Length: 352
Image 1 (cartoon, rainbow, N blue to C red):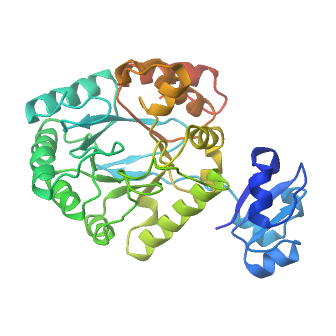
Image 2: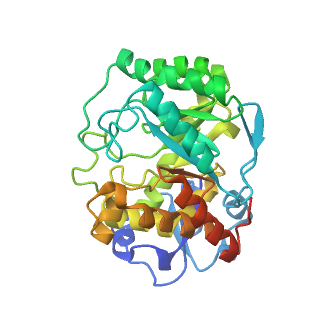
């Protein structure tokens, strides 16, 4: 996988450390090159700097073309990724979620909340039974299943045409959830469970592979990157390759840069500024910024539930830039309003 970025977007000090030599102020950084390709372009260690993409050999130029994600079948329907993002409403069936812990901790409350999100304009629903906030306690397999399966079963009866995602890193939870009617697995560990890929492949389900440095309990302990955008893109490319090798269809994979998962404020901002770098991977991009702590750091708002405006701002900007295909959010109504403005003003977005 060859990635290309203009040097103006890269931390030159970090790049100098990575390549072992000074780099010019302008040009294009290529990484993921084979040793012969790098050497032919005057580079080393799989990387090189050229003046423009036009200076790259034809095989390199072909490898960095930005492919358009193909439609994905979920819940019996083909969903296209054509510049009009879908909204994934969050249903946390947990007592300790960072944003709304306890709000939907019973089946009845969770189903009610899910239906409300659909009324507000959600296209899909993401049901989770284990918090992934920093320091969150682990949840047993049985407890997680007891939380999420009745909710998924109820949604399958009430709104069978709505794609439901199971937010889990446990293969057995995913297997049971898919059997109960879910059609997508949202895995923050990118198939850290070695059995997960097989579960997804056999069910012909969709799956979202997220980037995370560390684990939910350690991820915010001094996260470090030399070039966060390149390193996240390279890691997600490797996650895709492993999933495909394990039997998952490439066309059924999403990617998520993992905002807030093993990233500092500056790491998060760099990723949001340059999400288009992930397009080279050819997979739909799912973005989750909703109510996250980096927004509180920017605005000073400590009350998580009051980060609605800042969350909607990230959606509007990413949508107007055409950087994401699915937005995972708590506040669907505000998101829909932000998208309406983005569609009106953004050259790459159009109304759904």
